[in-house]
Length: 226
Ligand code: IPE
Ligand code: IPE
Ligand code: MG
Image 1 (spheres, rainbow, N blue to C red):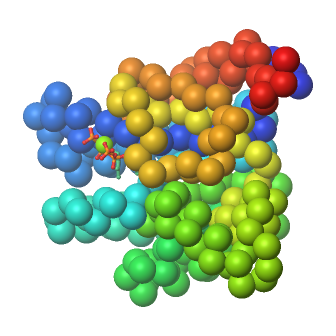
Image 2: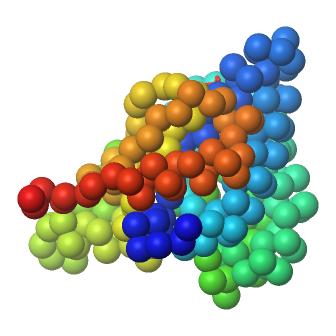
């Protein structure tokens, strides 16, 4: 199963928590909670499948437009997640990385995240979580930093993106059936394979990730060559 056509870096737009809850007449918060369980399953599956890096879109720079109560549910979920899963990540040698402007979150969350970054920094595989992330903002920031240093080229831009230390993005998955990128990894997707699947995020699990990786392995990537 693990062959050279297997992806090294998979990113997921975890979408559909709200619709999952709505279908069951549950509060949206429960959809997000179940989405958290899907995160646990998927991180475990990424390890089983031997991925070097899994990048998850958890909160976009546009998600601040949501109701205060939904934002606060998401923040509490994040607090609980760090509390419950940090030790496990350390033991499993997972390095946490955050992409996005996470310093805009509440000070206690920033502290918890920075503690988690510090305590997982020796990990061998990477879990990158996009928090208050927007690709256009990331690209503008990289352009500013590259210009301060000298020339703005694709290579100098790459060095200033949040993802500079990650393997190239191989496969981008979006759940929930929506076919758009919603300001996620626009630069990094230049030659990524894309997969839009009709599964709501709380229903996602190991089989879906494995099938996605197998689909990736069947694709022919040409990068503009022939
Ligand atoms: C994804 O699920 C979770 C976040 C964006 C934080 P949604 O909350 O967007 O679920 P839908 O799209 O309303 O179903
Ligand atoms: C993208 O989903 C953001 C995350 C999954 C965190 P959204 O639900 O926010 O995207 P739109 O609004 O449908 O484009
Ligand atoms: Mg959505």
